[in-house]
Amino acid sequence: MSAGRKSENTKVWTTLITNTAYLSGLLTLEYSLRKVCSKYPLVALYTDSFPAEGHAALDARGILKQRVPYLLPSVPRDYSNDVRFYDCWSKLTPFSLVEFDRVVQLDSDMLVLQNMDELMEIELDAPDLAGNGDRVFAASHACVCNPLQKAHYPKDWIPANCAYTAQHATPDAAQTTGAPATAGLGIPNGGLQVVNPSQAVYDKIVAQLATSATSNYDFADQSLLSDVFSGRWVTLPRGMNKGKKSTMIRRTHGGRR
Image 1 (cartoon, rainbow, N blue to C red):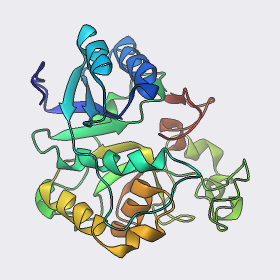
Image 2: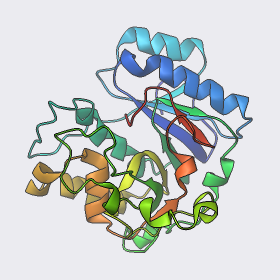
Image 3: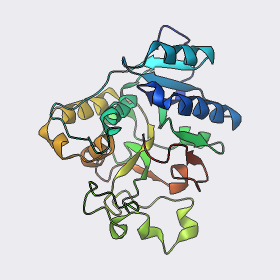
């Protein structure tokens, strides 16, 4: 942990903060977790780019914090159309936090609407499986409908390839059960990830960051996870991580990180 307060909890919420642009969102996220009476604290994962005034704001509110490295791949990808994705590689650092038994990573533009402490109990692979099991982490599917028709998004990001489209015939079940990890394009949304930290899993991630494959990853962290652990993750229903009509989470900035 940082030189500030230390958590005695073995299970925590985390969120990445690299600059003050998302600071107000982080403060709101932390408040919303307390308001829904979560038993677990939020730990702000900050990089060296996070300025002193940001630290002062966290300290004033007693929010736990921990330094993490700013991750970048060895072969860069041009994200000039969506510069927020440069920061997203560092959202993979929760896999390295082996001092905790369970980490649930949340984007700092999220607002928690109801208690979801059950995420701390979802069955995942034990760390000693080293990322070779079928339940490496849990997440919701990324919606690949591209409703805003962004020209730089992949051509196969269309409703027909969206995992949520596969659930249209069973809308009630879709509220509580995620589509199979292989449904649609099989890409997890990086905005909410449930992790049993494991050095071996993190080593796999870091090794992948050192390959040229990253030059083909349109969406940084979530592209890497869908490649390295294809079909071997636990799916959460969309209500755990979606937009303004969500049941568990609301986006305050309207998008992922």
